[in-house]
Length: 81
Image 1 (spheres, one colour):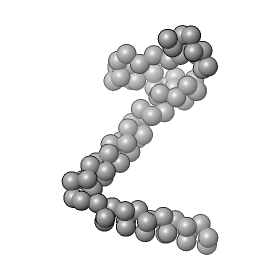
Image 2 (cartoon, rainbow, N blue to C red):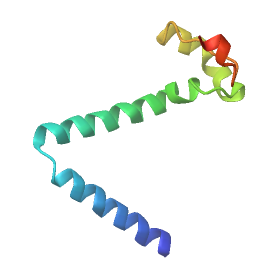
Image 3 (cartoon, rainbow, N blue to C red):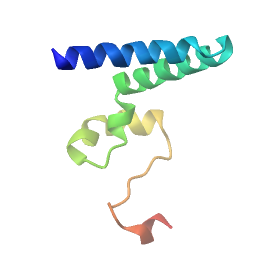
């Protein structure tokens, strides 16, 4: 019950925030949210993770759709320079 109330409260706050924005800004925010959702649905966000088990199934598609993306060993600052 508490989780439901918290979710409802968060939803009300989000709606209030959007209602206080101008039309153009509101449309930009909503478009950005839709774009992010689309990228998550397509797996782009997961494809860019350092975790091999999540990335490997999507690597071929990722390299075709996001050319130039490379992966560096975690924590190896020298390779990044």
